[in-house]
Amino acid sequence: MEDAPQDFLLDTCLLAGKIMMESGAEMYRVEDTMSRIAEAASESKGISFVTPTGIFMALQGGSTVKMEQIPTRTIDLEKVSKVNDLSREFTMKQISLGQFYTQLRSLDKEVKFFPIWLQIVAAAVVSGTLMMIFGGVWKDLIATCMIGAIGFIIFYYGTEFFKVKFLAEFLAAFTVGLLSVLAISVGWGVSLDKMIIGGVMPLVPGVPITNAVRDLLAGHLLSGMARGTEALITAGTIGIGIAVVFRFFG
Image (cartoon, rainbow, N blue to C red; front, side):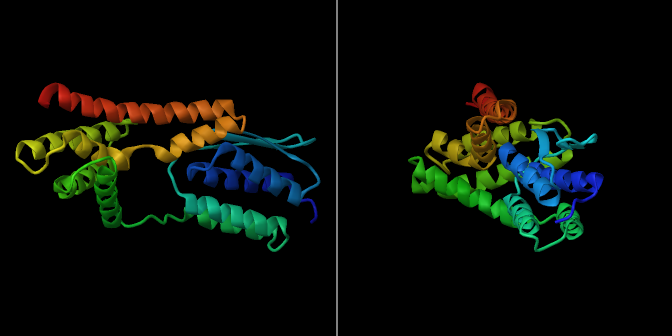
């Protein structure tokens, strides 16, 4: 494959990395993907530095260094998989660099999330089933499903409404704890701790914690610590929301 213009190649690599980072990919996977794209498009090795909030990219021996900011981060593993598939097609010379860039732009603009009603139903199912797995009783099942769904609704719309990070998690956890106490007081449940555990499960940052550990094991200490700290703060915020309920209503 002929050498591509340096600026265009860097833009393509950074766009691929940006989509992966915003979709919850691990740091080492992002760096590896960008490096493979650069090596497939030129004879130069790609040199990148990836952080949770920005990506720096250059070609070995080149004079240009470009940066891409990562303003938001979510979990969309389907996008990560699609970028990996496109990069494989490019490295196997099945598509050109221009086609690759065009498809990445389309993928970047694509917003494919499950409808909110389905997410709420999923949160309810997760809350109820995990409550049972942790030793709950059948009498608590319906109440726990409803509480988990309401907590997820607070979290979903709170994330869009509030600009303060972690506030939505606190309000959702507080709501779950308060509703669990109310359900016990009116006789809709018998095991307060199990109902709360089930209700907060849709809020728990499982994927960020997993990615943080994988980054640390891959040697990305800076990004691993940053992601791990963010996940721990999220978990701590959930715990504080429950603690406030016990302090004033327990």
